[in-house]
Structures are given as structure tokens and as C-alpha cells.
Amino acid sequence: MNLDPALIRPTQGHLPNAFTFDGRTLLETAYDLFTLSKKPVAIKRDDIKKHLKDSEIPTVAVALRPPKNTVWYARDNRRLFIFQMLRLKSVPCIEDKWKGNYDYKLKHFDTIIPKEQRHYHSSDVSKFRNDFKQHLVKKANESGDMLYIPRETVGYVIGNEGLTIKRKKWEYNVAIKIPRRPKQVENFDLVPMYIEDRDNGVGKKKGGREGCINHLKKMVNNHLKLNGKDPLF
Image 1 (tube, rainbow, N blue to C red):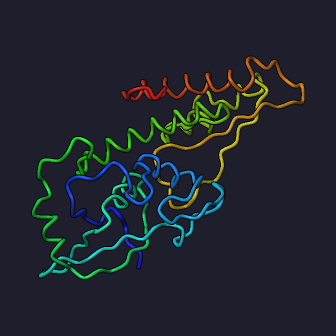
Image 2: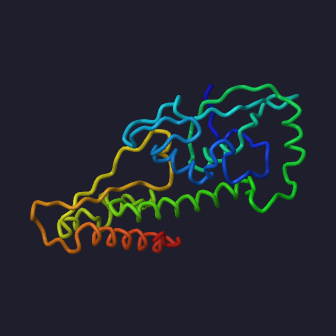
Image 3: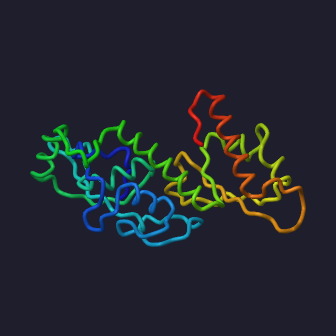
């Protein structure tokens, strides 16, 4: 069966920062799932342009809490945490029987946690999402040919609103592409862009790809500031 992660409740108020079986951090695993660049938690390697299939998302064991049996609770809390951060709308789940360990975890939900672990509340999911955004921006900077921009700025930066980059890209002599994202992560806050140098000799080429990326960053920051939000770059 498939469930919306937003409708599943965790059974732990704190989480280890890494998965036990492979040692990868939650941040690294979230990045692998988001970009489909590796195989995190039984996810097959795939191309970012191809839709992510349900069979390629790791399952979450869930159980209904008696006696009402109306709310789903997760046994796999780290997976649920990542899915909620990525705003996935549907993930495959396996129904589990309500056991004593569920009650034990809920009883100690808000106990004091070790420093190497993180809290699991809605505010912590939001904080992890912000950390993940910065991680994406850092990875994009390392690649040198891509950029992640906030979804809310897409219309202004590359659409038909405002001074879009369409009016400037010929000056930099670049090609700009926005790949189709996997269906499961299409609701995430950031949208990827690929900027490539063109070799046709057309245009003034003011700094090429690097100059265009810097120009895009300024446009994004200006749009965010105008709407009372902190700059991303």
C-alpha cells in the first residue's frame, strides 16, 4: 500500500544522524534519493529525467495504534523523516502489527537525547529541509554547471515574469535547461537548472557560463529580498 508521509506519525522523538547498515548520514541519503545519483536504502540508480517508480523507494513499516486504529505510526523513523523533508506525496508502506516496542518508543518520545542525534518534530523537519537546501546549493557550486533556484522564483528568473534570463542569456552565449524531475520529488522547494556554454560564436559572451550563473544568483536573491525573505546565495 502507499501512504502520504505527511499523514504518518513518528514513534521516536530523536534520530541517529546516520543509517546503521551503511553509515551514510541522513543528509547524504536524502541527496542520493533526491538526485537518484546512488543507491540509498535499496533505491536503484536512475536518471534524474526519468520518473521515480514506487518500487525504487524504500518501504516504511507502519502500524495502526489501538484501540482506535485510525492513525498510522512508523517503525522506520529515519526514512519517514527524509520523506517528510523532501515532501514526497506517496511512499510504499508495509503494514506491521502494533507491538510493545511501538508503545515503548512513544512513551520515551521526548526523553533527553545524545548530542550526536537530532530531534524529530515538525520544526526539526523544516530545519533539516533548510540544511538540505544549503547542501544542494553547495553541490551545485562544486559542479560548476548547474544551479538550484527556489520554486517561487522560477517565473521571475526563467519564465515570463519580470526581467527573465531569457533576455540576457544571449549576452552570455549559454544554453539553459531545466530537466524534468522525478515525479516523487517534484514538490520540493528547489528546482534544478543546467547552464552550458554555447560554441556557436553568437553573442558577446560576458563571462559565459560562470557569468550567467552569477547573474542568476543575483536575480534570485533580489526576488527573495523583495518578498521579505533571506537571500539564498
